[in-house]
Amino acid sequence: MVNLISSSNIAFPKITLESTLKDLNLYCCQLEITEEGRFALQLLNADPKLPGVILMDKEQLIGFISRQRILEQMSRPYGLELFLKRPLFQLYQYTKTEHLILSEETPITFAAQQVINRSSHLLNEPIIVEKITNNYALLDVHQLLIAHSNIFQLATSLLEENNQKLQRMAVIDPLTGIGNRRFFDQYFLRDWQLAIREKRWITVVMCDVDYFKKYNDTYGHQAGDHCLCQVASVFEYHCKRTTDLVARYGGEEFILSFLNTKAEEAIILIESIQKSLQVLEIEHQTSPINSQVTLSFGIASMKPQAGQERHSLIELADKALYQAKEQGRNQFCILIHKKK
Image (cartoon, rainbow, N blue to C red):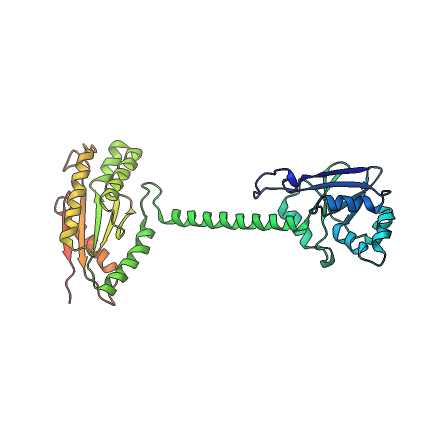
C-alpha cells in the first residue's frame, strides 16, 4: 500500500499562540513494511521536503524511516543495490530509532519542548503526528522549531506591548484621560533639570474647581465626573507645546507646568482657559460666586539653580492658589520666587 499526501501545497492558518501541530505542514506518506526500498526512494525523490516514510503493517503503525537514515543506508558499500531490493521492514531493523507520537491537536510549544528533551542523536529525527486513528503523518522537526521560535517572538512582542500599555495606564488618569500625579512628577523632574542646566524660567500653575463639593452634592457624582473631563479638555486644548505639562493632581485639583515660560506669559494662557470655560457654560447654581463653574489658579515662577528642590516651586504655586481662594476665588494669584 502506498498512501502519499504531501501538504506542502496546502495553505495553513497563520501561526498564533494557540496553534497546534495540525496548523503545520504535515507529510502523509505511509508504506507497507513488505514494500521494497525502491518505493521509499521514489517518494523521497518526488518530494525533496519529505522527511521520511511511515511504515504500516495491515493498518497498524510500526514506525518510520527518516530521510537521513535512508541516505545512510544508501551510502554504504553496495548500499543502493541492497536498499532497492530489501523489504522496508528489514531496513527498519537497521535504522530503528525511538519515535515520538503526538496528536495533531498538540500545541506547538508543547511539541517543541518534547523534541528538545529527546536525546541528542534524535534531535533531527521527524516526529509522528496522529491525525485520526490509524492515519499518521510526519512533521519535519526543523519546521516545528521554526514555528516555535515564531510563537516565542509573537509572545515576546505581545508581552512588550502589554507592558507598554500598563506603563501608560500607570501614568494616565482613568477619568479625564490626561496625565496623573505620577505622570507629572516624572516629566516635571526632566523639565526642572533642563531649566537648571540651560538657565531657563519655569512656571507651575495649580488649579482648583471652585466649590466642587457643592457641585457634586447638587448634580451628582456622575455630573461631577463629566465636569472634570470638560475642564481637562480645556487644559489640553490650550497647552499644546511639547514642553507643556497638564495633569490631574488629585480630586478637583489640576497642575500645569510650562518650561521656558515666565509668569506674565502664563497669565495670558490662564486668561484664555478661563474664557474657554465660560463658553462651555457649565451650570453651577449652588456656587456662591457664579452661576457657572469657575476655576481658581495659583501661579509660581522661578529660574531654578543647582541645589534647589523642584518641590519648592510646587509649594509656591500651592500657596498662590490658597491666596486666590482666600481672595474670593474665580481668579489667579502670582508668586515669584526671589533669589536669596
